Amino acid sequence: MNEHSIRTRLLQNILVPLALTWLVSSLLVIALASHFAQKAFDRSLLDDAYLLASRVVLGLDKGGMKLELKLTSQDLGTVLFDQSESVFFAIYNEQGELVAGHPGLVSAHAAIERAPVFEDIYFQNKTMRSVILHRFQPLNFYVVVAQTTESQSDLLHSLLWVTGVPQIVLLVLLGLGLRRAIQKEIDPLLHLEQGILSRDVSDLSPLTDIRGSRDVRRLAEAFNDLLRRLKDGVRAQREFTGNVAHELRTPLAGIRALAEYGLQQEDPQQWHAQLQAIVKSEERATHLVDQLLALAYADEAEQGLPLQVLRLDTLVREVVIRYLPKAHAMGVDLGAEGLEEAIWVIGLPALIEGILVNLIDNALRHGQPADGSAACVTVALTLPVAPGHAIANTQVVLSVTDNGMGIAPSQQALVQARWQRADAQAAVKGGFGLGLSIIKAYAHLLKAPVQWLSGPSGSGLQVRLYLTKVTSPAHPVKVMPTLV
Image: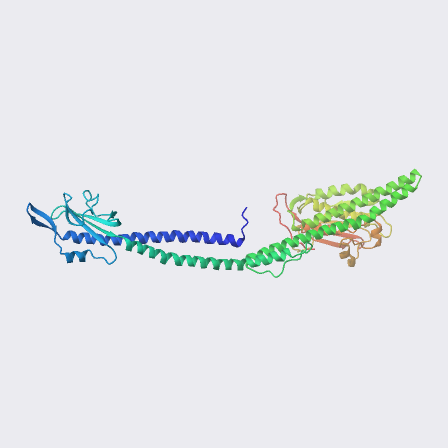
């Protein structure tokens, strides 16, 4: 596992390729310099060979005509003069006999090559560069010129030092500069790390004093966003735990009191009555737990849910039918209107059903008229009929209306908050202060406006939920903005 720091890895990733590039470029420069320097030296050797060949003439000998070099010792010294190198030459006739020059300076290519040939040879215990030039006038002969290569080697070494050492120094300086620059860029990350490590485990507040580049700030902002989400999650968990502990205490204490009272009785009828009371208390406790879980679900779904097209009239009909036995047992006239035609809306069945269930449940519990007359709860689907309204024929209204005491406008905001009740009478009838807050939370997730109004006759309560209407199940989903 690679555990090097970011600084070390950045330096490696920058300097290693840079050093390899420098090495390859330096070798290429040296190779090119050596190639062109060699061509220059070879050209000088070839010029000397041509000059010597131009001074070869025919001369008289006892046996006839022969080749000879027409150069004085002074001229020969001038031709072969070199300030730093030793120059040697040899001229051979067609039979390989030495005409002039240094004996032993021969080449295997002399008899077979016609063009000038350059090669490295070993002569007088020295490595030399030589050229063989073949000529045909006045007779066939060839000239060999050789020269030591110390100056050429010295030139390449000088070139290596002149080009290599400064580049190595620059590379070292660049590495030091990069190290300092990288450290400067990494310091904000270290500052961010210290800020995180120095925090208490319960401190979920956003980070402040963020320094550095845009990338570091974006990292800090992402971390702050994570802290906010964690804070919301912890808050929701604490609130849920506190809600459960607080709200279940009363029904559980009631169940225990009923059980203890029943154990003190000897009459089986008293036992039966206490068991029935325990069952009812358990039902209220179960209802409370369901509402707590519904609120926790709404809190966790705050990021938004994928909505879909659903048939609203069928869903409303099923919920109303489910509540008919309970309404009949409580003596409440539960009815429905506007379910004759198919109505398609955008939403989620679980959320709409949760809203409708809580509305009907609250209406059954708290919708009793103050004058003692028969309670009536009506679930209706209607369309907005306001002339010229911008949302006319694009929304459908799901409403639940009762003829009870209603809720005063000054208390509507209060009862929508968790654990609040409109008055003491609501508490006596088993309200736990969660139903209306669940409605508000679910409506927010559905992006559906909610209205709290008085009943048509001026008494009671009417709650309206505005859902986006579509023409068919295949209609594209378009979410309306929240207008609470």
